[in-house]
Image (cartoon, rainbow, N blue to C red):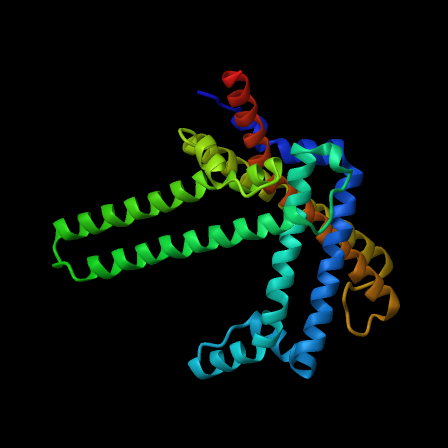
Length: 292
């Protein structure tokens, strides 16, 4: 049976960041552009309600009426920002997959074409599967809630919930290679991605957990370094980042901070998204060699 190295696949994003820093920087600029577009959408759809909504999001209301009003206010923004975010995510993810699987397609790989449309279809499929599995979990909770209140029922309910959760994780893990397979084969390759992941659920899950841990470490370290740098600069210059009365210097420092934050988020996303492509490449390559 074809296999792959968990550590090598989990480290693919870090390797890509280390070997191709200019490409990651271009992706970071693309991410900054996306943030700017979201800001413009918020300004166009929310207008005077934008500051009110931001304040409400920091401290969500507990009153159902206020919560409904918040959702109604945010609906115009979400109806536009949602599709834009999906397209951005498809373009970014496809660029990472192409860099790992088809590096001959160009350095940054950012475009909007058939690959991105295929990924959007895969995202929609994963969302439908997730919704279906969550519905099963809800049904399990509903069924177990009607059981008698005794020790046997409690143990049975816990086992049933655990089994449902494990099944959900297993199905999503089996489908995790579909996106990379679709990019590699230039078609929606649901069957191929599902077939290659057979027998590798635990290894894939370990890969994704390790990659998530690495991304969190990178986020924490880079934010710590960035915070320390701005703290030192603020102590030396007296600039308070983002202060409303700080003048142009404070605003410039705030913009630089946001740019670095976007670059940090870009690095984390690369670390999270490169492992499925690396795992697919290894599994597909070994399967092809075995068939030959």
